[in-house]
Amino acid sequence: MPERGRPRTFDRTAALRHAVDVFWARGYEGASISDLTAAMGINSPSLYAAFGSKEALFLEATDLYTRIEGADIWLALEEAPTARLAIERFLQRTARAYSQTDRPQGCLITLGALHQDSTRGAICDDLRRRRAENHTALRQRLERGVAEGELPSGFDSAAAATFFATVQHGMSIQARDGASCTALLATVAGAMAAWQTMVGTGAA
Image (cartoon, rainbow, N blue to C red; front, side, top):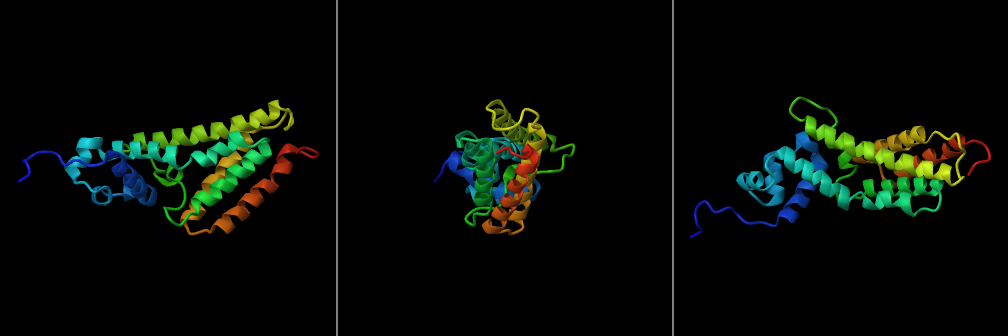
């Protein structure tokens, strides 16, 4: 007979990965403790013992999500030889990743929690910080394009980064609403059509 009071053992990493999927599909508010424990294969006491609270679990889940789901998208900024290709590939990879059918569509960082209230401020603050870091990554890649002479010296890297981040956020919502990869790639084509206007006549 099992020893009474002994905590149930489980694979913490695997359980956290399942929690990512629940939060990704339902958002913070939409994911109930029963949803989480069912997906993670544990009971409520084990969840609280291992992670502390639903809020702490969500923060840990978003950290794991960022490491395992978004890496390939953001690598495009580093790997592409030009700023234009970097942005185009970044958006194309976004379209493909957000529309995959074997996982929740869209982006957890965009859709996980948008409205801050007095009890969930830490969650919205964390997601806002992550979105700001993503904006910074875009801005820095565009600034590199200016430094390397690909983009004109007066190019507004911050404004362009805001534009392309907004396109990505919109693609997340469209994907969650059922947009196909083909439809999202058409959005990418439209966004890249604005590139020439941004950089000015004669620029790459």
